[in-house]
Amino acid sequence: MRKSDKKLDNAIRLHLTEVCDYALEHTQGFLWLTHTVDYKRFPSSLNVRCAFQPEFLAEAIQNTPLNSLIQDQLRSAGIDIQAKQICYTPEAIN
Image 1 (spheres, rainbow, N blue to C red):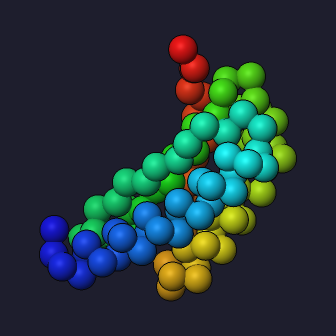
Image 2: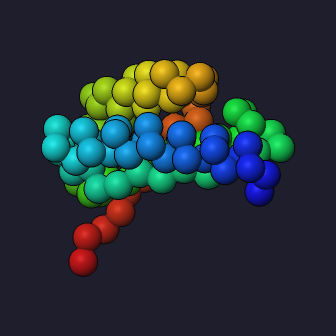
């Protein structure tokens, strides 16, 4: 990973951490989020995955403001992503 990629990854993590902290407090069933990226194809390769408790997943997909929040946070870092780059997934709690 190049030094510029590392700086970009740190910025992505910083902004997504803010989204995660907000969602943990304000979004029912939200568990965590993560991202993957191939910097050779950035920003189209950036994908954000949001995990929810299974019983809250359908509601989250329909009613959550997370897409806008994620896009706004990343946009403030100069990174534009499309809604299709954000996915929601169920995650069972043991």
